Figure 1 (spheres, rainbow, N blue to C red):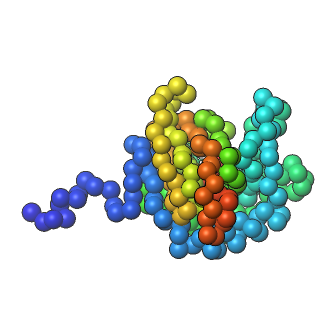
Figure 2 (tube, rainbow, N blue to C red):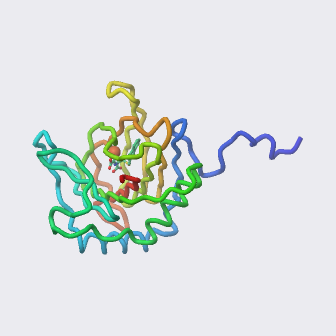
Figure 3 (cartoon, rainbow, N blue to C red):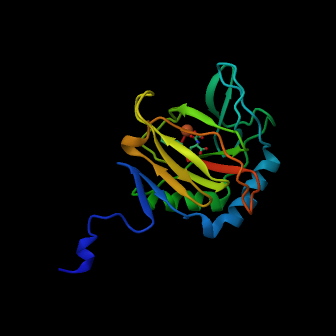
Length: 216
Ligand code: MD3
Ligand code: FE
């Protein structure tokens, strides 16, 4: 028997399962961090970060913007995807090629071939910013996975279950980590604990998260 056979049922190196159909690709974005951050700056110059208001009237501590043909937005009337940035009245900036490339490769590495996101939500966290436990269910095709890329300061991600009250697991997400969620994990509750101030060499006191979705 070959030593290779001992690992026949193990996931490939650097692929860390966090659910039946969810994986962390540790450091997967590191080689492309500089072009990704340059592209983030380009998007933010066209579509500035803003603090959205929830239908319940709360202002989110995370600042957001989008690129791609659809962008996620929220106001007192509800959550929705829109082709138009309500701040500029213009279409969202196009999805940078380096974004789409990375998202497609990461999804394929996790077993989701042919992922072609039409929306990228860009979240900016400062020390104290948090995202309370929620589900992502505003997307039309819940069969498509979600890919997220973490840049800058580390964050503790909370991964719950299908019911809001289900126990949550904690996953530390660091600069360069890429996570793919799909299949049976797609509707699991999740959130982010308040960020600690642990300045990052490239981004200082910020965390940027790119979340790629097939929304339309
Ligand atoms: C897990 N963002 O924007 S990564 C969000 O780090 C969001 O900014 C977090 O949750 C962040 O909605 C978490 C993205 C994520 C997105 C969808 C998921 C994780 C998910 C759907 C199911 C399970
Ligand atoms: Fe989410």
